[in-house]
Length: 278
Length: 342
Image (cartoon, rainbow over the protein chains, first blue to last red):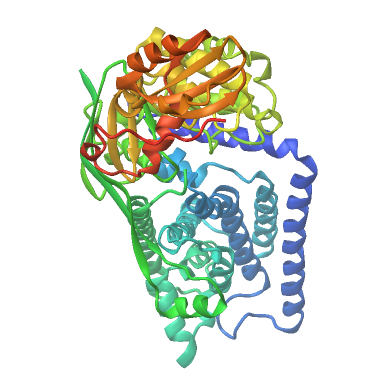
C-alpha cells in the first residue's frame, strides 16, 4: 500500500461530491450561475459602450475593440477558474482556522495545502468560463491577425500561470487568519487587487502609473496574470517591444516564485495553528 | 510495547486579555495585554499496546490539548511525545495513516452529503483497497446499526446517528491508535450505551490502543481499566478506576434500616448522618473504623438491614477536581470532604 494517496482521484472525488451537493440545492446553483453571468454581460455592455466613443484603449497601444475583448475573455477565463477551484476554499480556510475545524484536515495523510485548497469545487462558476471561451472565439474571429500554433499552445499554459499566481496570493492571504484570528477582507482585497489586472498594462504610465505598474508586475505580480497570455494571442503591437519577449519568461519565474511563497506562508501558518476550544 | 510515550510535554498559549466595555476595547487596539495560559504543564505518561485509557479532568484541565498534541494538530511548547514511534507534530503521512481522532464537538463529514460519500473520500485519501474498504464499511455500519442511513444526508441524521458515522469514518482505515475526545457528549442514554458497547467490542476484537476523554463516569467505568486524572495541566492520578476510591475515597457510607421504624437520636456519635428517612438512615464514616462502627450499631440497636458502600465515584472525582491539581503527595492520606448526597 502506497504511503501517498492518488491526488488526481481525490480531486475527482472532491469534484464529484461538490457536484452532488450543488445538485441537491439546485435553485441556489442556478441563481449563482445566473447572477455571475449577468454581471459579466453587464460588464461587457459597459466596454461595448466605451468603444462607441473611442477606437482604441489609449492612443497607440494597439488595444482596439476586439483585441480588448480577447483581453477581457482572458480575464474572464482566469477569474472563473480561480473561482471554480479556489475561491470558496480560500474563504473557508479562514473559517476553518477560526473555528478549529482545520484539525481534521491536519489529521489526513495527504498534503494539507492540497486538501484545504481544493476541497470544494464551485461548479456554478464554470458558466463564466464558457462565456469567456465564447467571447474569445468571437473576438479572435473579428481580428485580422490569427495566432500561430506556438501561441495557441502557450496561451493555456500562461492562463494556468495566471491562475496559479492569483491562487497563491489568495491562499497566502487566507492563511494570515492564523495570526490575525480573523481575516474577512479576503473578498474585498481580491476585488481591489484583481482590479489592477483587468486592464492592459500600457495604460499604467506617467508619474503615477509607472510606479503602479512596477509594483504590480514585480512585487505583487497581478499585472502579468492576464496581460501575458492576452498579448501573446493578439499581439497588440507589431513589431513587438522587447518586453514582449521578456515578460513571458518573467511570468514563469513569477509563477514559481508565487507558488513557493504561498507554500512557505501556508507551512508557517500550520506551525502556528493553535486550534480552538475542544 | 509502549505505543505512546510522553515526557515533560507542555503547551502554553498567549491570549489577548480582553477587558469589558467599549473604552477598554479601544484602549486594547493600541496596547494589548496578554496572559499566558498553560494548558498542559509537563506531562509524563506511557501507554502500552492494547490499553484503553481514560483521561478525566474538569473542563480546561488540558485533556483535549493533550489529545491534539498527540494527534499533531498543534505543536508543544516543550517536551517530547512519541506515538507508534513517530513525533506527532511532524505530521508525517506514515503516522497519520495509523491513528484517528474523533471529537464529539466537531464533525468532519460533509454536512450536505450522505455519509457514504465522505467515506468514499476517506477511502481515497487513506488509499484503502476497495474490497477492504467495503468490508470495513459494512462491518462497522452493521455493528453500529446505521447501515440503512448511509445514503441520507448527514444534516438529516440525529446527533447519535451522526456520531456513529463520525466513528465509522475514523475507523475505516483501521487505525492502531484511536483518540476519542468526548465521543458521547450530548447523547441520550441509549446512544451512549450503544457507542460504549461498540467501542468495547471493537477494542477487544482489534486490540487497538485507545485514549478516551469523557465527562460520563459510565463511559469510563464501562470501558477503561486505567484512568489518568488531569487537573490544571498536570497528571494527578494514574492508575486503576477502583484505585481512585481506595486512594481518595477515604470514607464509606453505611446504610441502615431499623426494625422499630425509629432512628436512634445518638446515631451521630458513629459518624456524620447524611440521611434520616425513618426507618432508613445513612451515616458516613472513616473507612478505617467501619468494623467498630458496625459492631457498635449492631450491638446497640435492632437493625433489619445494613450495607456498606463506597461513596459515588462522581463525588470522589469531583472532590479531586475541586482541589485543582495540587501535587498528589499533598493529597495522600487526606480524607476528602465528600459532596453531600441527597
